[in-house]
Image (cartoon, rainbow, N blue to C red; front, side, top):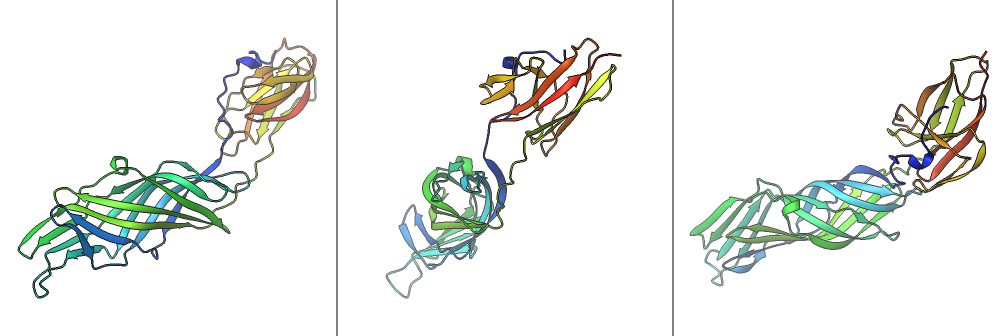
Length: 326
């Protein structure tokens, strides 16, 4: 016999059929305008001198596409985003015009780390996402009261995972080979004992040259058999189009062709009473596996049928002949 184990005993170690996912760098559109404001614990909301704030930087995003290239899911995995200008200022005006402002606020060097949980994208490009906005360490703040008292310090780093989630609806669409990601956010930077600084607007990001998914390679089995009688004899197997870095599953039958359902993989084999052929090696990164099997001396003479299988697919059937011993 070539191998042992009924097909129903196969340990399914192949991943389920999945989306094609890849990581991309997304450049933040610095033309987007954000509102900037502040609120002090003692004086409440204060006015800003800076109506036009932009953000700049980049995000690392994962995009998932279906076989036709449509984006069906995404996530923001990491980002470094800074403000333009880097120094943000706001104030409370003094009703006595010739006196100094009641309050002056300054925040310098804010750097944000925005992430999202994975989210689905509708065919229209619409999505709903849970957004986490972290603050990278190193930014400074200063609050000056009537030019006679001031508080300053360094804003604590807040990892995205420790921030309060923001739930927002946005858009992720394709324009040619470019993906455009847009989502409205309200960013709150808390300075303990002083107040809150906030930005609100649309984060817009561009990913250029998003390729279409590569067409899947045909799932194919090839068996090279000896042309002459004699033992030991060697069969050489090649599977093309398998799962990369996973051992392929190959079945064989000494009973001929038939129909055998394999519900674990969602396929039907074209073999009668199939058994699993041990495979000693994994596929390479392109899903190709090649190995050899030595035919035992006591193997029955006659036809043997082989077929490879994976989640959702079966290969062609190969008929080979076990030749008699000399």
